[in-house]
Image (cartoon, rainbow, N blue to C red; front, side, top):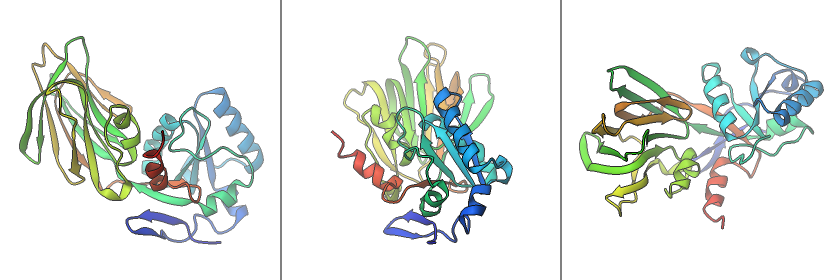
Length: 279
């Protein structure tokens, strides 16, 4: 049995020993979690009937059944457990998921390639002075709450780069999340090895021709909301929403890591490259 492998700049390198050593032990160490939909719940029941059920807090691998949204929820849930997550698509898009199959799952997991993801950390201050923090493995977005466009000042590493952006919103994305909301907002797709963060406006009104920027992954970004009483704005980190923000600081947190598993030749780096040639 080969070592689990990890995607790294310059190629694939060993991540360490296999997640488990043989098929029998592996089956005993899988925790199955499912989105609250009939198709995902049915898949979970079928897999538990075939491979057994391991409590989440004792699992060596977590198999998530659902779509990309549920995969993100699972990633957040297992952060404190420090276990890899292998997704199988029982949802809609499934960009972060592997094809669903009940057949020979332990062998699939033993061959899986690993991608290590680091989140963005959002530090949001609200109009009442409260402070909220959250992690985002896809993106942090600022969005207008009412009919009025938001007005946002953008600073990078302590220097104001855009004095006033009038828009429906603006987002900063991880490379892994660059194919999600960022792409829908016409932001660039970024390879995992690029160490870049896309900064993308959402329906910008002024400056009309500004299409965003690519920032180094170690950049510290500050969004300041202007005219907060007239133009209330919310901040969202993955699925955590904070309303009526006055400022939002965002930076990559490399002290936090999650490992996501993919079938051979379908790793996350390959998927991101392939997405750029999708027509």
